[in-house]
Length: 158
Image (tube, rainbow, N blue to C red):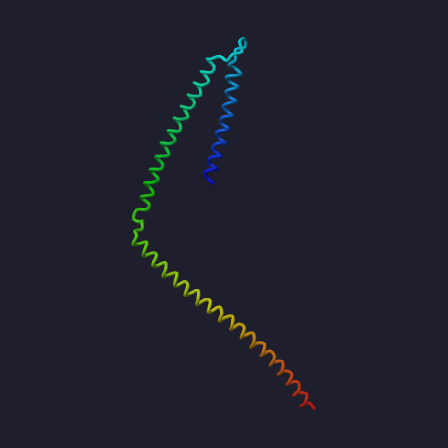
């Protein structure tokens, strides 16, 4: 899909470039290069147009070569820098295997801690429910106690 999008983008750019070239050719060669008496195009205008295009392409090639050289030098500098940064930091197969073993060990410990945490959460929930039940019982007993005290005071008052 990405390749097709790139191809479509490249085709659109080429179509735009061809339209621009066509417009410029019509303006320079057909517009200014026609002999008003004969109605024919002057050969000198056509050759000058194409010579100018070739020179412009040569200049563009020179600029792109310079840019390419500059980019290659930057790549080489970056690769050297990257090698300097990673010297001694590369992992051997044994180191990688050791890291895998440590990772498994830590994963097992994490799983054990998660299970313990889950058990504690369940236990906390049960204790919370038990506490709520006991508070309800205590509240009922306090209400009954207050009611009984009122009855006792009422009977002692008689």
